[in-house]
Length: 68
Image (cartoon, rainbow, N blue to C red):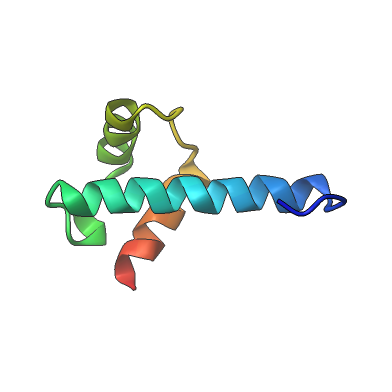
């Protein structure tokens, strides 16, 4: 990662990476539509793949990524 960026930049970058990992894992498990990706299901997948439970904001980002 580029040095010298503000802390907010690193936080949002890491949030996007986490959302992408979660969206990929959900798609691989057969969850293909954002309405199927509830916060509870996303957090359960986070436990399954070994990442910390995502915030509400990260869960929203996962659903947005699944739209594209």
